[in-house]
Length: 457
Image (tube, rainbow, N blue to C red; front, side, top):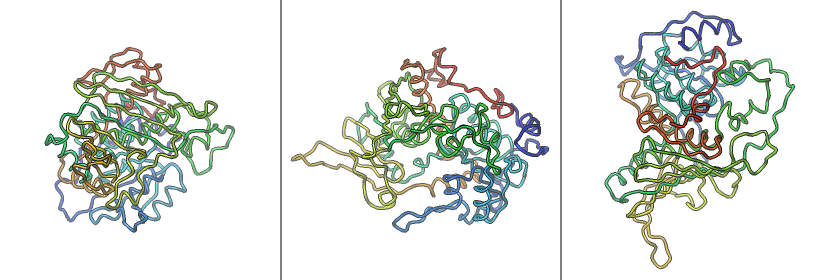
């Protein structure tokens, strides 16, 4: 659906009041003075959205700067269909609150938007913003389905927009250093890459029914492209991650961080094939649909790339704030988000979000031998800065949406294979689309009017 059609139909839905909008003429701040501020709007004022905007502190007194704290940024709006969240974010940012994103998209003074919406809204939000002439910082994962990820890339290119995917590890100096070490051949040839996503148990729930829609929530707009269903606080308050209508579980919603980092490090684009197996084993009576245990394998010409997920392993620890912001490494054996790169000259362990990297040689006297290493820092600030700089320079950002789409597609291949009972998918190495006819039902989702990503963006 074209943006004009969406906006016209939106006047007849619960999106809110009708406002006449037109597609802008590729406006940007690229040619303005460096003294001029970038007008930025936040769409989606949940935990991640407000962290991006306001910034946050780590336990060791280090500060992660938010967009509103950059000298060259002016926050024009905070937008959310949940009034209490939107108003709170706007008050802290000292800006306007609106409930309808069309208000933001219609304002010609807005240069860029931060889309921190639920996963099922990422593609439509980004496409509409591109059509409105806005540059976009979109949270990971890129999309809820592979097809709409393709449309995000098309929209970014067609409207000449800067679209930064929220996989900030690509902006981390320590990861750039690790990438340089690999590219210089110091690790040798890598034939096996293992990516882990291991968290505490999540997704065990029963969906509440018969609840009234809260007065300050636009439930229909929150559902957006997803199928119509009665309001449920169970879904709204985080469990949507484990339902196919909205996401594909933690491997998509969070695991894509280390999947993207690993794919970048090994320098691979599209696999020849993919398959996955697993299940929801810890609580078969839960209403959660996505797997808590999953092993996915991707075949490239000279590399096997695997992703292993367990969501019941509370003894496997995420990299905490102290490790992220200091000269420390995680305990690799029980690091929840580690990457293992098996080269012919050594084993590299990499941790996302500031976990650092180490290269291990053959042990000596049963003790580890570290050949090289680099401490990490959480790269949120660098990623935001890269986005803002690219708004002005018009250069592709570190995590351009096409890169995000490629990495997110790896997850889509695995969950499609899983939903088809472990079928091996053959992937078109030019388009990235599965060749298996039965995969089409999951490669492109069904949309609910008027929240449609159209064939022609």
